[in-house]
Image 1 (tube, one colour):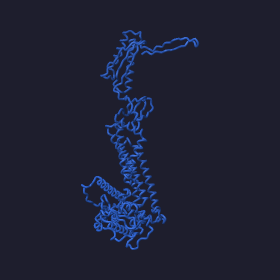
Image 2 (image 1 turned 135 degrees about the vertical axis):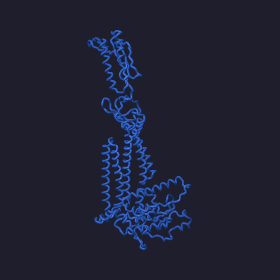
Image 3 (image 1 turned 180 degrees about the vertical axis):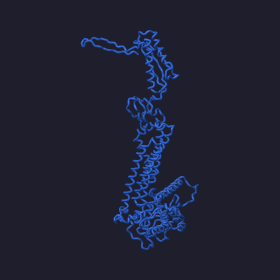
Image 4 (image 1 turned 90 degrees about the horizontal axis):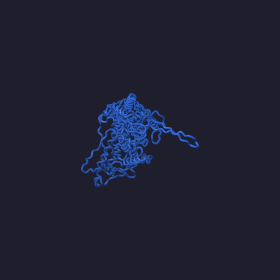
Length: 605
């Protein structure tokens, strides 16, 4: 039994002026839940009802739930009619028959399923309906005139005087709905729906009432055992008796091998899909954006596999009761986890699509910032999915928020260093003190930036080794970006012996000035400077300055070498010598050890 074809929604007149914010929230929640259930039904029956959709839609008679008597009568009539229909083909349940599903819909309209978890709402309501029919076929009901009807309710003073009706000597209660789109209808109460399977097991040993004109004999047994397709029913008929008629946990034994096979196939396909995704995505990433996007089909397929297993379990194996709810819960939970992978995979591809723009350097800080923003966005979407999925699985939103809050605090306390590093990364990406490929000087490390990650930056030192530096440390300390200097300054000194004449010292200064005049790479705002600097005890000192307008260190060194050779040749041509370091030897006599040789070296500057 399930809701499918012939869905209808009862319309109610709502006074918008009297609708409070809380009432609007409740109404919206009920409508949203109703839509989700309908969508679930459509997905479950999409394959089986494709041929039926082409047929003319039949008119569906709505169940009368205006009073406890009308609700009980509508429910029993619908169940008896459905039993007559399935009694003609008891080997399987044809869910594609529009008459079957229309009658089943009418029976389920008498059930208040508002407190059942959304993911199993249809299944649990159907099981409760079958159990209630089995119970009502065994217990003695009062005469119809003793059950409150619309006339009795009006005579008693209206709806406010009768909120609940309990069938005598039973735990079955028909209650008035107080809120939502079905307000003021009388339905089997949520507590009755929740307790129905347990209550049925307590009365299952009782005989059916003999005075009834129609009894749904073994209705529950058929509901728990019948296959969902004629070809599967034909296979079951050929199975050994212990598999066909035996039961484990109330489920026919032939269904368990089918469940095991479904689980094994689903897990195998999911593992294959994820391995293919990792292998192909890694292979094409950075080479072909189109093929990189195509690889997202693998995690999407992995997400759909547990949903397909859920459909097979319900549609063909027709699992019922607690095993079905557990299987559905696990399948939907796995599908939600797979959806998280899809979200992160899609965010990566969106980021790479943006970075592929010709205006963005794939290795630059802007690209890293885009990747971080995409990951943060995917984390927010994952949290939203966690809350929606948890509520769909029946976990209260307050519990989910509390769990997320406690978990967030625990993660924050346990990952302070990680969070600090993440904020350091954000600071680096926003300030942009360096980029990939630039040479920086940090503390004693001098090298070229190779990669800027979420946690750390990799630096290739000029001496060869690679150093990994935490981003929070880089963000909180001074960094010298050598690659961004607009020029390179050289300060040089030349020493001439003290016995050199003043004329030759003057010639030496002019030679250097001449070589630096309009030199290669000269910055017009920073002309070279040459001075006879000072007298030292060892030599005459000439100092010169020049600025090479380029950040290329090796080009600067090439020019400096050329300049040195030119000065050397000019000095040799003019007979100007360079002052060399002097070495002085001093002798000291020690009465015990003899003479000692003490060498002192002074360098001319």
